[in-house]
Image 1: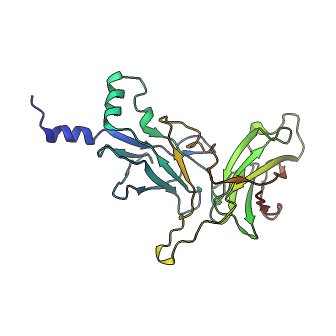
Image 2 (image 1 turned 120 degrees about the horizontal axis):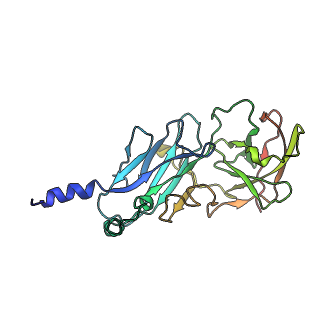
Image 3 (image 1 turned 180 degrees about the horizontal axis):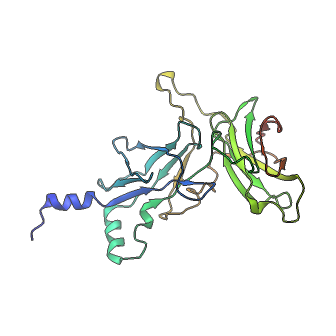
Length: 267
C-alpha cells in the first residue's frame, strides 16, 4: 500500500505535541471544576478541549518558540496561571517513539497545579484561612504564599496563590498539625512573595484582566516538574522581609473577620 504525502501529513498532524492535564492542588487529581486554557503565543494556535477536562495540541510544524498559555476560571474557584512551555520538535518525538519507552508520552505532557481561589467551595470543618495580602495599602496582585513550620521556617507545609484582588485561600494539610496538639489553636508562619514594583499599566483599549500575571517558564521535558507544581518562585518576585505568624483554629476556616490583612514588606 502506497502512502501519499497527504496521508503522511495527516499522521504527523495527529501526533501529540503537547498535553495539558490541570491538577487541583487540594486533591492532587483532575479538576472538579472546569477551567479555560487559551494560547497567547503563537496566536494562531488553539488547544483541543476533551470531555475529561484535559487539553491537547497536535503537531503543527516545528515551533521555534515555546507555547505560552493562560489558565483561568471566571468564577474565581481557581487562581489563574500563565505558563511558557517548551515543546519538542517532530524529530525528537519520532526518536522517542522509535526507542519505545513505556512512558513515551511523558515528555509531551504537563500537569500544571491550579491553586484554590477565593470562591473555592470548602468543607466547613477544614482548617485554613481566606485571607488578603496588601502592599502600600492596596491589594497585592498575584501573590504567592507559603505555609511554614513554626519550629523550622525552612520547611514548607503548604502553598497558596493570591488573585488580582489580593485574596487567597490557604488550607492546612492534616499532617501539618502536630499529633500531640489537641488545642483549638495552632500557630504557623506565612511567607509572602510578590513584585516589589508594579508592572506598567496597559492602555484601557487593550484591557486584559490577566495582563500582569507572571509568566512561569516550564523547560523540563517531564510530566511533573517544579514549575508546573508551583514550587518555583517567579524570577522577578521577592520575599517579604519577614514571615507573619497566624494562629489557626483547628477545624475552622478563618477570614478577614478574625485575621488582619497580611502586609507585604519587600526589602
